[in-house]
Length: 286
Image (cartoon, rainbow, N blue to C red; front, top):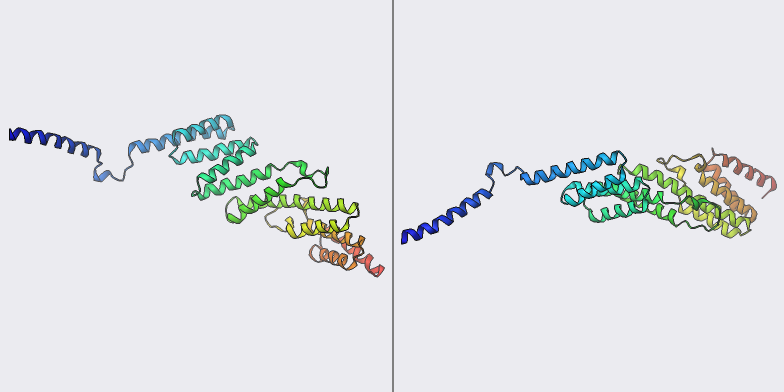
């Protein structure tokens, strides 16, 4: 009886040991990833690469559908994260900027530790915000046309450069800042001319001074390739300021504006006009 009882106890114990041993990898193989994990990663990469074939062929809808599958089936792999960016990229390429911006922002919120990918997503948010600026904001239909989209783009672009001064996307973003700055300055000068035409000189001076104080001359940025019409916007603003002061009979203020052009923008065509004004003022004794 005793022997049978011991035998009945030993058998389950042996079975348990065998079961545990079977589930435990040998010490020499501990550094090898489980085959299931390896298969999972390989499957994720294969699915992502297939989706990228459609993406590279500009088959955006098909690519997004496949990327969604990568996210669903391989949510714990890095390829799910990359798929999120490619889905947003596909919307961006289709000029669905609002959708793309939302998706990039969701990515930034969900993956705060992935610095390089976050920088990329942030740059695309800034790029998309710029792309959403309607051309109509530059049309002179109204002296107070809403500039909210331009200002939003300016803030988004500046924030990116402040946070990522050395990112590979920064040079491109700085170029966009120059373009946005040009738009903002031109709008302020348009409004100033509107007030000047109505003999509201104080309002004109206020808008010009605001433009000069708020926005740096885009042509002064080494990374910004200025269009011909954007070269010397600061000089253009100073010339308009000087002309306004002339109408107000504020001779000293006008002279200072024209002299500032000659001093800092001496090689521009605007400097020729500034010198002519200074010569005329001298000849008139004012």
